[in-house]
Amino acid sequence: MSLALTTFRAFLLLASFAGTEKHLVRLVKGVLDWWSGKKIAVIGPTASGKDSFLARLQNREIPQVHTNSPMGENVKSFRVKLALSNHRVIDMTCKGVINIGGETDYRDAPSGWLAVCKDADVVFYMMTIKDLSATKFLKGRRIRQDLDWLLTAMPHLKQGALIHILINKIDEEIVSHTDYQALAEQLAKKLSALDQTVKTVLHPYETAYTGATLISMKNKQIYTRAINDVLRSVYAAIHGTVKRKKAR
Image 1 (cartoon, rainbow, N blue to C red):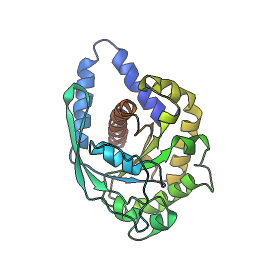
Image 2: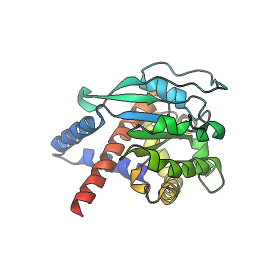
Image 3: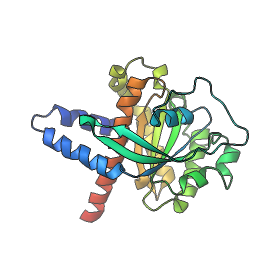
Image 4: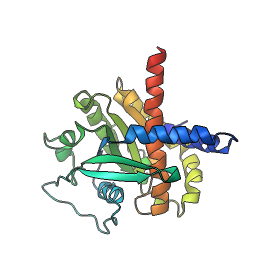
């Protein structure tokens, strides 16, 4: 089962048990503490939703029309405050993104993706639901080429840097956040195949991968639900990795 679906179901299961409220409060506090002050970077193909994600993080309206600067545009760092349950707030820093970063020429340039990612604690790679449905993560296709690039970039990233995939534009498949779980189950096989591909390609850095999350930048309700899952998923993945290393 995919990391995205497994983590999502785990939180639903925890929430359904009686007497788990204190556990969830501790979990939320752990998430808050871990994310506080972290730096993030956002990369991905053109029109995957990078600008819209940055807008959402800054609590601005998402761009109505996709624009592409031929020279690339560096977005300055900015602070992000996101609310989890009980009105608790995560305070982190978005390091920035090259808006035109989707083109492979800019991905591979010295001032391209690596320049954005090298100091980030978490790198968000953005793709779309159509990329997933069309299995563009298979060998020779665009998403897979980007994963190959990530492998070459890993030794140059900050020690302990994490990779999380955002699968955007699921509003093209569902109209409400209440349909989120059904879509995740419907796409379970594709999500599992994506997870396996990412882990295989990133070896021996596969533990840096924290999963993939279905999300929509256009639909605010879906975005709100998904981004909370993203924050918890990344924390849960790194927390589990640390515990496994200590056990060894």
